[in-house]
Length: 130
Figure (cartoon, rainbow, N blue to C red):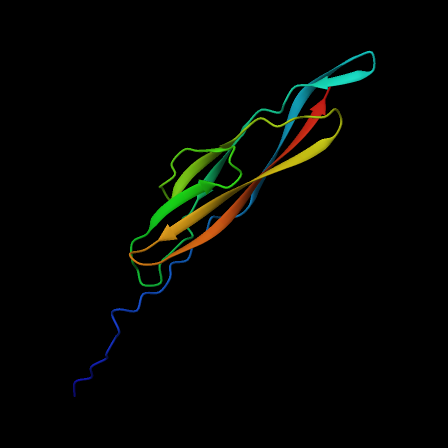
């Protein structure tokens, strides 16, 4: 007995993009006072690792990767790689106040015919201190 299973080879399932978990870090900046007025340096720019290793194609097709900075102010080291790094710019500090600055990075994954996206948010909390 021979059993043949017909499979539609034209059907292509969409890949699944996974940009990883949102990330955050804290930074501090130096502040000084003169005549009761506080002046603070900026918090230094920060770097975050980007990891698309959780992305996959249900059909087993190979994937291409593209990282895009949606905030327009960050720098991505390897835009077309599964793993990369995003550098966010220095952020303004205020004395004794923690301020959060968030930056969104989009991952696009594509197989031979379709694509999908995911967004990871990286956040820097900046606080000015003596």
